[in-house]
Image (cartoon, rainbow, N blue to C red; front, side, top):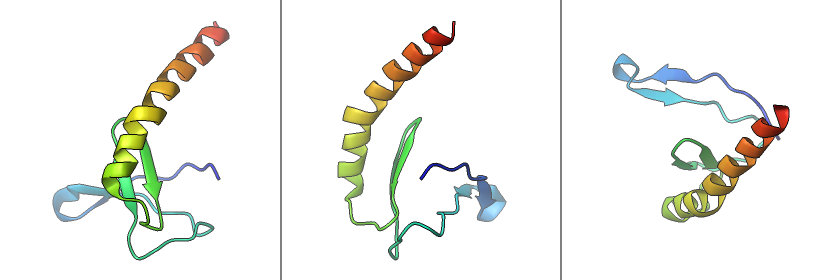
Length: 76
């Protein structure tokens, strides 16, 4: 599933932000999130947040940035 979602301010003075998880995804009582420039979410909360962050930093982030640079270079 790929989707765009509005980021909504939450809490006192909008200090936090929320993104609504699509209803088609199975969720648990909590979600696990790892984020830097990109974000990975385990909506069931089954993956430890440190493991998710390590995976994001080691595998996703480096490959994504080289992929996007190649894609942009192809556009010209």
